[in-house]
Length: 90
Image 1: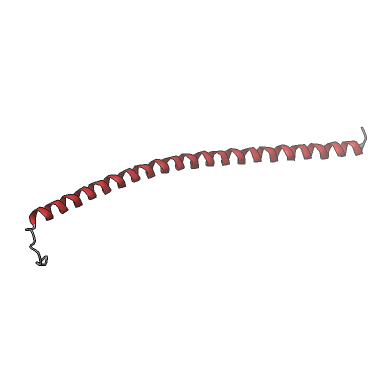
Image 2: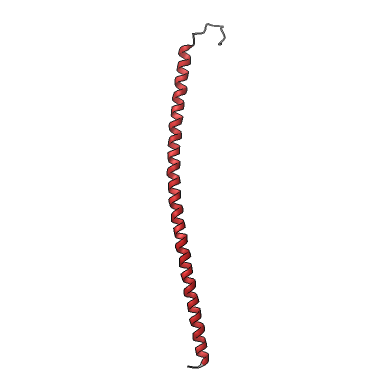
């Protein structure tokens, strides 16, 4: 083997090592991004569950408030004396 071929082989070895190193770095980045994506997916699912629970609670509260308002209206109408024609409400 002459010196020229030896130099080319050395360059080729360096190139291959560089490519292998870059490939490993890219795989590590890929794994890191995949983990971040999984974590965000989990967080998204938890937020969806929390949102559904809050919507349910909001519906429950709205129903209770509507019930209270209905009871107050019933109480008001049962406690007010009947009005005569031409009489103004107090």
